[in-house]
Length: 242
Ligand code: BTN
Image 1 (cartoon, rainbow, N blue to C red):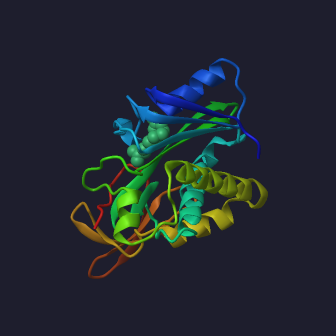
Image 2: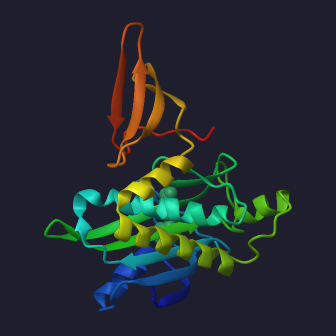
């Protein structure tokens, strides 16, 4: 796929920059990259710390998929980036729903924003933040320190990491458009480190058994005489790191 890349030194947010460029008439697909963000957007309205030497990238797409399939873009992005990074000997895993995990710590995250018309997602912004050499705090990890600690030099520069991330995003998105969600979801589940973990829900202990195609977390609750399977929408509980 051919697409323009807009590079910025310092902007509030690459996601916001995409919407501004669309407003000015730019047509997806295109990419915005910033060396630094002053108001990086994280999930649940949080701020994404975006000091220099991290990867801050957003990709604009026109998927034209039904709004109820919006979650597929999350599966594609998380799966695609993980698939591609693993080619470089980096054992990235996923934490429900869209956290990139390395050594049980947060390596990066994905923030997707969409514009919907007639029940179709007309525009999607896939925002990706990956810790490269930027300072991180618990439970974060940066990729450079992992590579150094493990005597790996498979990725040498932030530019390389950028290209790998973009390859992963496009590879998974194109696979999805061609073959549907099945192969993507199956790959996503293979990388999910949440399966088998125990969690507590309203005083009951449950075991995570998977994720539905709608993005809900599947949990098996067992009491003395019965077993129940429940499906929890994203945002209703959070899973820890260890
Ligand atoms: C998360 O909270 O886990 C998601 C973080 C996503 C951050 C990225 S950095 C590039 C893009 N621009 C933003 O403002 N946010 C996303």
